[in-house]
Image 1 (cartoon, rainbow, N blue to C red):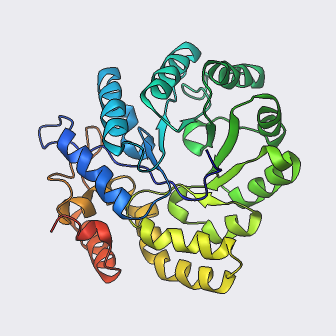
Image 2 (spheres, helix red, strand yellow):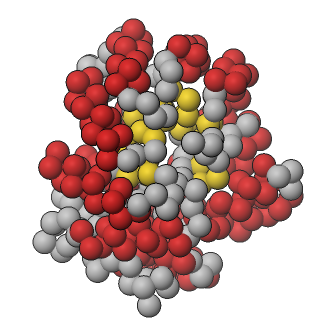
Image 3 (cartoon, helix red, strand yellow):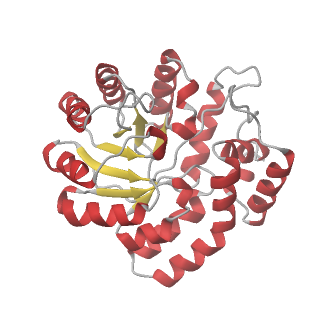
Length: 304
């Protein structure tokens, strides 16, 4: 597989109002995301509400997604878990089903239960030894785990399939720059996240792509591609245009934003989020839909 650049957004998991997984809705989500012109799709990530899915639902969604996408774009399957053996099993299963890449957070289970750097290294190495597709390391504040640049560089150099990195901690640009400088050619895919809230700084630091939600990939991808092509002024202007919606999603809506816009766009029937998550306020939803309509988002009109 050629190194991925551009935008690799996280697909939401649609639910019926009853809380059950909406399988037909998932297929429609995937089709809509492909129509947004993405470079790959990530499933079962935090913005997919992976933390409220059962193991059976994860397996169902992995198979459904890979069969429905059917190679139209690469699919990145998130396999994070505290247990190394469970992650290895998930990784093998995802590769066998046709995943193009895996994404993993470091093992964590609360502040008092964080493995040593040796344990973290061995965790990723065990997965790499079990599969033959790239692994994206997700370095996110949610885990509470500090992944030092020397550790990440060692992983990139010594673990065969660790080659992509999604950086979304505070001051991500500085960490990206340090990682790229120290890791050199072993850092194949330095990516940012956080809904592209820091995208220009991260591009300045050397990132080659972003993993956002599926809210507005068609507006964010050109920012990355223009920047990589050397047209920094165009990238900056487009980022400034997209920033009010980026900020509203990142700071006010979270994972609910894409589902709400997709519901209003006829992609899915419900924007239900599983308890203990709660729907956003009417005030927040109204501003979201206003900003989305002003930008004529594909997701807001795809199913109409």
